[in-house]
Length: 145
Image (cartoon, rainbow, N blue to C red; front, side, top):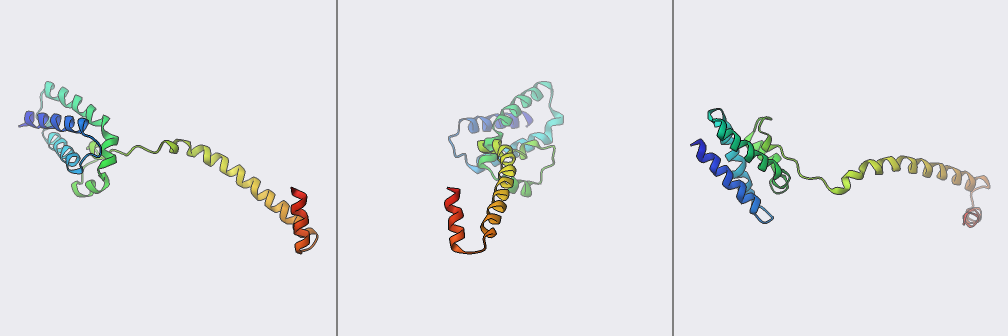
């Protein structure tokens, strides 16, 4: 029985690796359920089967971002309720490449906001120094340019 599950796991992995996007949710969900069944029987495996399982798990981990992309794993986890040891239910989708530069945006945003605030305070003081009227505002805007 356990050897048949390993073969089924291997076949489902091959199906996933050769599938054209978008991958069907049922196909992915079934793959993860087979991995769950294997985990229940893992203590009965000999060294050769554990080695095969290790190799198959490495292939599954390589497909992790793809699984997270096409399968809503948070919803699946509420239904299946896996333990935290069941790592195959906890894949995360790949982030957008632009997310790598969020730190740069945050670092540049603070000094630019401070500069804008200082400029706003300076200009408002200059506008209001001669009194509030349209002519004074227009003269300062012409002077700036």
